[in-house]
Length: 504
Image 1 (spheres, one colour):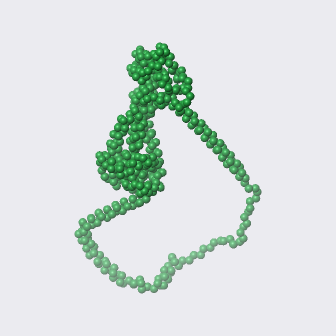
Image 2: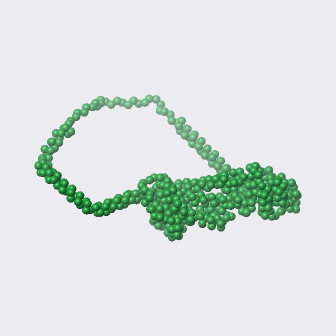
Image 3: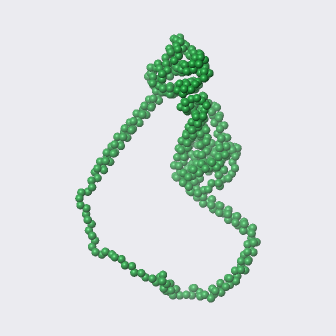
């Protein structure tokens, strides 16, 4: 066994799991990736337009892949070679015999899942026997196992955020960092499910550490309960004794010769000692009383000391009673009562503030997602842009394309932006007078189809790059957006009454 078993505290056992992954990372990650990546690719290919559900499916299947990682770890821990092909070949039988149905249903939200996994997989327990073993393990180890789940969930989220930030910094696009980050987390950067893919990558890297830490915590708990370390030491001792016995049997002839020589040498010494013993008197023939007197006559037992001390034998002194008034502690009672009242007032004020804060954000959420019953008045301007139907030309994409060919890219993007907002207002999306660009984006995301949302996100990104980032946008990019605008907004509801106006 490569791991040295000894009593450890739970946190040291969790840290030992990280070292276990570092020692056997090649075998663990090869088996994990060989099974995880193909399924993830199929999920995202089937649910490309709905990346959240693909990510949720991969997250829900984590207990299945945890069993693959634990199979590799348990075999490597006992010195066995476990290749990725062998583990994957035995996966169906391994999953069926380790309670995969319960792991994917009623035990899916078990926060101590990493601690309980060896019970179902390695011990092959089920039913009441498994529940009894889990209860014993949870007495001292459930708290650290739950904290392990909480910690690695946050590590997984931070890891995905770190990858997003790194990509946003290194991507060769002239855009503000805020725009890039919003695109990544809205899964709309170049129309792909980027955020969900990053979440799957983070889970793929962190999950083996979660399984390994739970496994070493399980080993530590079983070591304390059943003395596995003592049993292992006895087995090692038995092996050493057996090796010594075999070595002694192999050299039996030499040992016999050495013993004979030793007896020849010791015989004269033994005869001399026997003669000396016969010359000395028999201890049993001595009188016990004589021996006791001889022992007491020794200076260590016949020595007497007289110790003197002074002791008061007179009357005891009377205690002096304190005179005066007792100390007044009423001020402390008043202070405690005052602090209690102040704490209660502060708690009520804080609770009221939190309630108002929650109601405000609830109302804001309902307003942004179109749950308002009263239809608001249609705004004429949104963050400085004229969104009146009469301010648009009859052919918005054609006019924008002509402006882009003339080099007036800013006016072309502004016209496309205003035209998109007007079309959204015509389709029933309610923008309000004080909405920001972020509010408009959230309203569009909640109401429109994925394709139109992706186009609007690209249009907003180019507009922010030009208007706020002060970076140039090529006329070809503006022409491509104008042609995309025609395919996304084919209807022209204000064609009859819209006059050709100079774009802002």
